[in-house]
Length: 146
Length: 131
Image 1 (cartoon, rainbow over the protein chains, first blue to last red):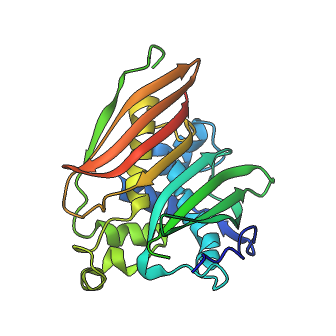
Image 2: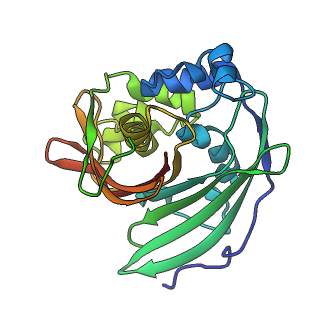
């Protein structure tokens, strides 16, 4: 059976996430990241940030929320029982700071079949309130035995 | 940092995630997929136990690069790409290692990987940093 590719090019409604100090602190603590710019507004401002700044990989916190509807869309039709997260890329622009409202849009870039496995590639683009790009994510999910 | 050159090692990062780390990471990230936090569920779908979030391990790779080469500067990391391969497990030490691949002015490219013993959980990771 050929893999279903109808969703290639499809975008999903964007989500907006407000970055907050406590959430940054929680994320940095779990990763064991100790730089005070993630915990203390004074240290962050001294380093030139408008408020407590998120570590780069905090990008998952706001971008995954926009990706979820894409992953579960029946038009995409991924079989979750055999799906693994195969690869990930992030490219960062402006830093994400507490108070920022970050809007993320998800899009399906490609769906391909290779050696009986399905490769589903999504892109998330996250911009801040000033319209500047904060991060772009490329998410590759592999579904075994399509 | 000014005299980094191709072939230099990234200072190694070693972390042993405790039994409840996946639960705390789930809370911090919002990813509550039961394969990460429910041992019974994970075993029922054929996994050895609940497994680490791949994006947690990627977070450690990002930390190793930013902390080891840029003093933890949150703006240094411009791009990170990884492949998830072996499954990461709680309560086993993760070792992130890396090598500087290219240096071009203040821009550097680094190859990295993360492993638990012989199990290389992140392979072919490449980071681009601006120092």
